[in-house]
Length: 247
Ligand code: MF3
Ligand code: CO
Image (tube, rainbow, N blue to C red; front, side):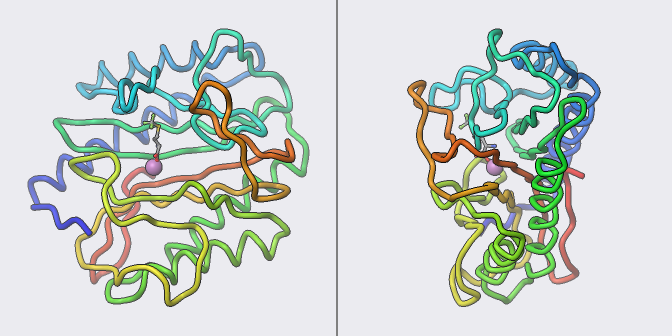
């Protein structure tokens, strides 16, 4: 697990604050009729105007600033002019910001206009999974305590946890060790060390856990076609507790 210097942590925290502010701005833009491509353009401009860079753009060839994943799309939906948000959709907006070489990563699933009670509950439970997880994230304990708490909360609510995609360490790189699964036993994973920065990101399906990869090689969708939600924050873990830096 990473152990950045105080000066480096200042930069990660700044990256996280820009990520948070950009997602809050994104929330104000989301309404029926806007395309995910328009969202992407506006958020890219916001990040550059903030003195930062969109970290996903160009990462392993990814073509955009945001991942915009609508309804049954779990993650890595590529923004497109032909994807127009409509009343009743949910859209997961995932953003990684690079500030002077350090990264912040967060995701929110937003409702578009008025959505069904079922979809709202999925969004709410996915957010709760994150908070149940970090209640169980403690220096000197197994990371599996967090993973297990997330899985238990999702399954207790009748949902399933995606297995193929996990959270991660973050700092100088977008993805660093360790993997942070949203499932597993309390005895799994490494011991959490002091001063680690982690991106915790439950991806929760309304139906079954199985996924498909879209033909664009990026988008991951539910096999059963039911909706999925995603909630992510970058956190800093110390002996004093957990600070959420993208909230
Ligand atoms: N926020 C995503 C993650 O947590 C970023 C992946 S999109 C990519 O892994 F294009 F950068 F790969
Ligand atoms: Co992430």
